Image (cartoon, rainbow, N blue to C red; front, side):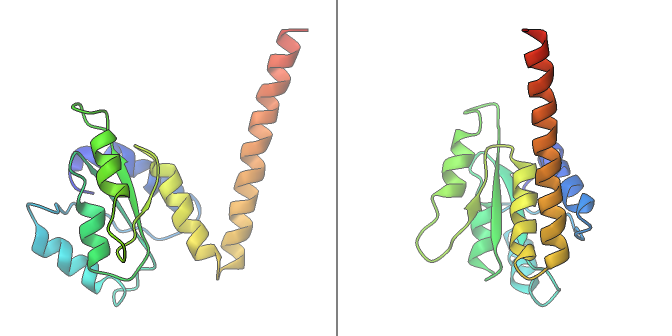
Length: 156
């Protein structure tokens, strides 16, 4: 994450990944204040056993792009909401990457979806993880249908 103030958003990704038994490593690297450390982390991530990187940042939100520029691993950007422009600035910075340096971008503050997208990437080669994701979707659908039933009973 670009700042420890992004932790509440990143925590949702951490919790989601851990619920799927995907190992997590968490760091604070600033694209602007610690560019050397961000570069070192990204350029060595594959050799260090990473399969994908989730990068969360607000405002200028250059962290995901800096990470993506220094690795060929999939990078998933989480644009974080700020007080100034409600996260639109971070969304545009994260999604508008130049050709050749892709960053998959989720919704503003989309920590859960970043984790699930990461898990889906891993599940291409991991049938057990694919099954866990299918079970999660089935559970989520059942929750919605329970709510539908409650609402329907309320208005009968």
